[in-house]
Image (cartoon, rainbow, N blue to C red):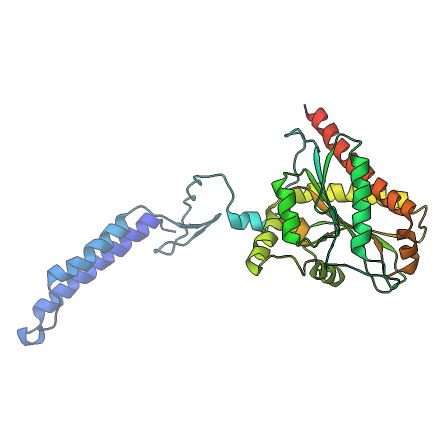
Length: 337
């Protein structure tokens, strides 16, 4: 089998030979029959570039790890030039899975915690048949949690401290502007069938679950974000490595909540940790979770939620979960030092 260079030389010889034979045929033709022939200088105009190409070294067309056949029909073994940058492209990042943060690399500590009492003001949230509103329960739990955390090394801030209307984008901005280390949003669910008495904790991420998407749609309704903002936030979901830390925070808090509340609420169902595209999770720049501590659709849960001791249990479980997460970060930092 001939090489690429041999193939080129053969094609060159054949082209020259054909041209010489053509000139001989033209000379043998009567002048009246040669009015339309190409002058020799014009043939050279086409021939010289062809000769230059055929004599040039073979260069395969690289497509990643595979070379396409060159003009002579022979596959080139030329390797693609090394990349000038080791950084992955944006498309590669979007297609890939975010890598978990290596805690040993950076000393981590939880100093400032943002507590977000869900809803408020004109945004009542869920309302039980007996008239108990979600916004009242979440604010009471948040105030109790702040009291507990003020006795610890944490600095705690609330997105709202009274019954005020606060759009979701303002909550996100508050957390980001105050450079929080952790964001915890407190909510009370409404579920069908009403017999359900569930505990759920969410962290940032996509979901195909219709029930979760419906819940996220309801919670995001008064977000204050435009469609362009949503696209930017959703893209950030796949790029942001904090999703792993948010999962760890959600897992720790959910475990503490269930362990604490199941004694007073034996029918409580632990639905665990899930991903959902809630705006307050998408827009915040720190590990963030949204906790559905109970269900106002269930009257037995409503009775418990109207009990101050039960709300104190919820606040204490949230505190213990956040504290356990912070302790795990500090422990990992010491091991890596």
